[in-house]
Length: 83
Image 1 (cartoon, rainbow, N blue to C red):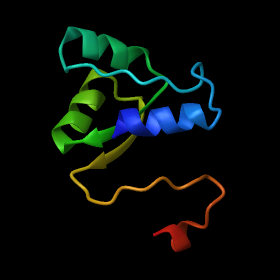
Image 2: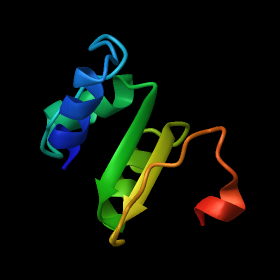
Image 3: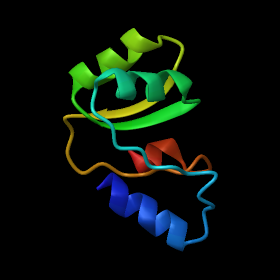
């Protein structure tokens, strides 16, 4: 799903320098990528989110863990209406 979303955003005009998609296992390469990122959007398990914070506790992490029907809410949206 992440690859499909990224592709649609790129097609809509979001520059690839602003949005990058990186698929990595949670090995040394994954940990290295995570510690260099400014922010991470995660759709995955709670254990994965906890692992990311273990690698770097000050990371800006937006996580959807084990949920259904995830959605994107823009910064200018009414939070109550979005919920």
